[in-house]
Length: 387
View 1: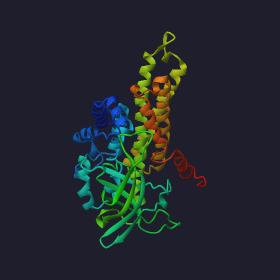
View 2: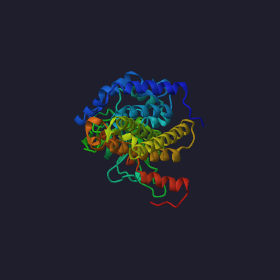
View 3: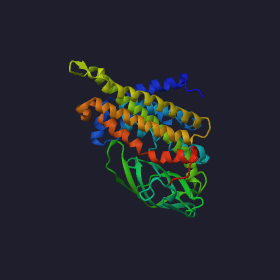
């Protein structure tokens, strides 16, 4: 396993970094303050061809892997864009994966080229208010009637629903069997029909530029041809999205931590207190040094998990571990950066508090730290199931 970047991967990092950094911190502060979707940023990445990074070439994309997508998202985050910049782009990177892996040829030809160009804006409907992290107990149901399914239910924390044109949606098509709780769930990729879907925005701590929502589905009609893979096997198809999602959000946390760390290091060199730069004090320097070391370690774990996925090898343990370690490292780096700035860390003009607020999300989503530890305890260490 070789983590040395190829010439192509180095070029990706260089070009993405240059494009992302053309949007200054003031741009993201304004988007956050006004809760405005960063359409200009997404359009710039669409025009440069980055939205189709994982879409196969025969469907208009670049045909690259999770590794390349992760490098792209890291450099977006490291530019200072934070989750406000990463979230709109990463929805072109992991939600399409089940369609690429399991969708019919008709489904792929109909939608993948439009995803690659950014014509389609995706949302992702899995989590429900009454199910939480137990996906087997989702209550949204899809009932087969003739040549289509009729869907009714609720989803929560649905990102992009204010602007989405399409959604990847998981619903139960057969009663839950306690012996096989994840069977009977079906995955759909379909138009976001606003005559059948009501959207309610959720006010939240960070990432105001990218909306989070609760959606109410009442009689949504989905043609049979919009089923992704096999009816009743949707959860297992969804796993082709969940592991990349963990890797990508993990490496985004690393990038956010690095953006905050860079600002803190500059400040520690320039800020003079008691006739010396504050970075000369070990109480300031050591937390920043520790943050650097943990970010480096977390990035390696993310790249290992991405490499395994791209080479068709099992990566569940590594993907979960990457998200676990990266979320901690990213938050600790942002927290150290905020502390380094002292009272100014609370001031928006220093562009640290927004990163601190945004990176905190990754200790909760896409899966909590506790559920990751449950997974490692049970499936890696083979300890008795604790939940």
